[in-house]
Image 1: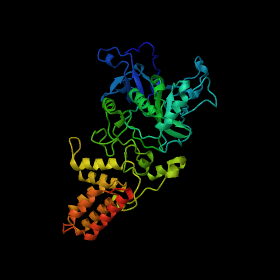
Image 2 (image 1 turned 120 degrees about the vertical axis):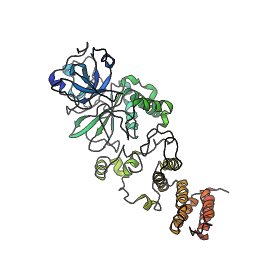
Image 3 (image 1 turned 90 degrees about the vertical axis):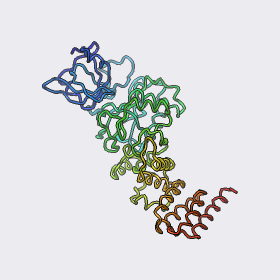
Image 4 (image 1 turned 60 degrees about the horizontal axis):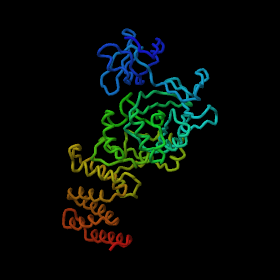
Length: 444
């Protein structure tokens, strides 16, 4: 198979530079079956075979790999920043180019000439202090007039939990002794993030989306993103077509699953779950996004003053043991309640699961979402024991103190169940709590 015009054949040494997961572009295939792959992006799945002289590559969107000669693929992991137009190649500084595995720094710059005071809005020197998870964004080929706006956008982006993007390779680089993964957003996701998140900064309309390329720089030591070389980052692999469909239908309500049901429309949006909560309590949020060990949390804390200021030791008590402690801040408590109801009732997409339902109701209760306590009381009441009766009374009295009238009606009904042994004083305390809430809120 001959190489196509515009691509120089690779030397044997260059062919050995391909690494597993590297993104490449296929070209120059002449056979009837091979021509359909020309121009398609792919990822290397098998290194050069000395006997056959071919590499294994998997075109994007396919599950199987192809066996292709090195001269018919070109790496696209070589990322160039834009120096002053007309600058001879020999005068381009090393920092304008990154080659996977080269160990060079990645410093995006923008301006007429690179210098020490050139605007740098994202960089990989050391660990990011703008985001506790140390995820950084890089923009390439950004218009000079958009530098300030892009900087604002990226600062905003780094403070969000993002999922659903695809990765191109997961190449490694090294910065200041720190190994980092390079994750390249594909064009569809790149444009989606710019359009929907940049607009929230009030500057989305000023972008030429075709000239901005987003990358994620993920330090290996601090953020254990799962990078299975080419699959979508998430609990399970999803096809890009599936993700695009979800975004096109409800772009601002794309689902972030708490427990692996990614993309299920029965669940609610978790965009407001803060990175801090995800790191402090990974059991509450997307553990496949941020599943940090205590050591990793300490590492991030030591490198991020922002994270250190709100850091609290992880609560080692069980969920059951925390139900009657002081309330904890859980921004997604209402979402947990909805998930609890979903697993309690079941649907086409979700099987009934009592354990998962109780888990989500407990988390919601700890976060102060009182309808969840009402559900826990109903669950305990079915046991029909004196011990469960005490738990029922405690849950319902707490809910009544926060104005949840259904809980008062329930405790009155359950008072008649002799096996639970709910006392009249429990009903009175629930009533008093409800009246105090109404008085405090100025309700009749």
